[in-house]
Image 1 (cartoon, rainbow over the protein chains, first blue to last red):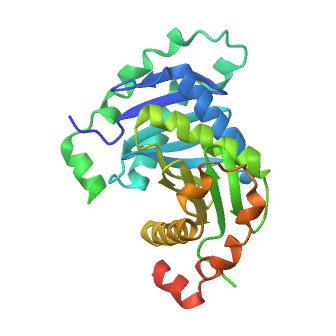
Image 2 (cartoon, each protein chain N blue to C red):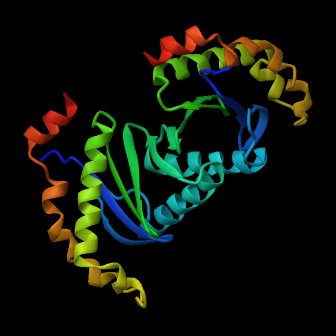
Length: 136
Length: 136
């Protein structure tokens, strides 16, 4: 099924704490380190950091909340506003399930977050109709 | 005067061999290493590598020819096709003046490329009319 968001990564600092990737081409911690380095150097150029990048025919979008980064990718014909809306919904869901305080003395056990997948199924597997409306 | 391409970097492998930057915020070789690292990891995800990224309200576009990379940035409101057209013109001019063979046994002296600046003046300082056309 075609999706608005093909893949999703949630990062805390430079660590990938959650991912849902359809076709893994890169180790998630290497990916996390890569995105974290991009963000860090991008901030030297502009304090808001990176907001999107395009690799091949995929666009990656970034939204940042506290010290978390939500990264989603999609084919480039999907509208930016729809991707960002989707990412914002995911971020809201994430923090409603796992409030920021949970991470204050967190031991880094990411297995606690694996059930998040159940809550975003709909977001990552929308009907084709939803995808069509985001393209045209 | 408003510029169409605000900044330009020309890289050979990870070395910045030419730049024209309006407001330097980052050391050019750090910038070069950063862009080279992005390209290298992007190629793991897709063989065509990175084509653009957005930092703050600036979009950076990448054009690759052999082992050279032409990077230009502009305000996000400028159309992608206009930026790429401009970068292609610049790349053509560059290789007309400095043919690929020049770099086969090149000693890395970037001073010999400084004169390129006067050849791209028109590309980097478009008239307001042209900028307006690309915005609307």
